[in-house]
Image (cartoon, rainbow, N blue to C red; front, side):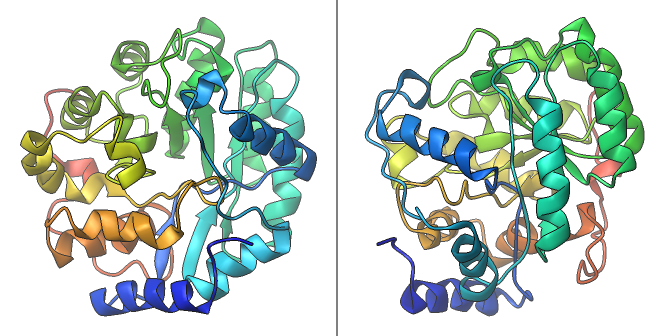
Length: 316
């Protein structure tokens, strides 16, 4: 049995209801072909190197329809993603084909696509954009590729020109990879300063370095996925000294959960954000308003006085 149920759903709804928003927007949820997801769960069960060798129980090990129901009906998530990612060549285009069908049959899903540094990548990314992709996923750690690979340069350019966000796992948590950390993705941003890069997991554990990138490039955002939770604080605590910068960058922080692949209840991510003590206005922006504006959702609300595109920065 999962950690779900009407009790948790009621508590999640009470959280966002108190904030006065119509629901949550979760930019980091995983839906993928069932046999691929089963392999992912097997890897988590094995406590493998990529998850830091730690015990990682999957809280929402449910069938696809039940996972969608939990998000939409129980938790009141208005929009979410199907974060797919390849770990080898020849996989990304197939995953993109699957995601078209999933988004088409799943209300609330933001059509998600992905890519890998391989011949033909520019073509299938262009096809995904033409098919209506609204967000992409790049997993530098699992894919073990340099985001600054020349094969990907035209892809980043396409995405920057289209204004389509890319959630990128580029931090070195839960385990470092050959190309994780702020350096490789920083080289991408230097070439494509208007790229709407969403740094997954707040860039843990290199939080300060990725806050630097967000301050430098006005279109860089960070998602909260697993950050600040008890699970992550044990091994990659967010530095208290950076809370002021986190507050000031509140218009470019987006709620993400990693559902269903989380080792604790969904509610805990929200509680972890609340206990930061950054206030209800910050929470409203993070949990709904920022992503609603980014994706042009009908309940986005009025824009703040200083939008991400006009935010001051040292470059971009």
